[in-house]
Length: 160
Image (cartoon, rainbow, N blue to C red):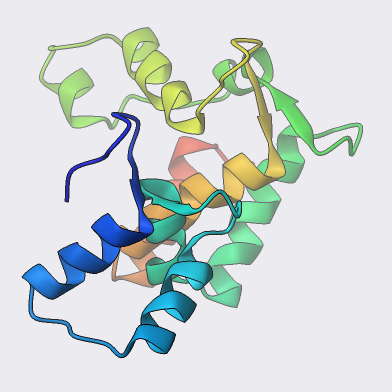
């Protein structure tokens, strides 16, 4: 579906038209309820992030516990916000495939990583919601618990 505003949002009619295009026909009442469900910021549109968060669900308790441990490692004052500089000193990009192949440096891998948190202010701060949202997406993409756990432990050096 094309975004009407160029920033990853579609209005209700476009969303429902897209569903029809792929063969999903719903009664009007259900269609409107579905749009309301996805429209978390209540702006009359469904954006890509809202849609992804709604369909992927939450990480398992085991995974969320590790996500929280990693966040808390950096949120030393319990403010709910961690600074990019605190992450950089610990982030381990040595296992990143492009670092291994020599395409990018570890610093470049970190810069690519930090962009995933949608730092709109450019202040280099990551709040707990952004952290959880990012790792929820990572969790969804990795079926195997052991692989997910290994990834978090190695990237954030949690074994120490």
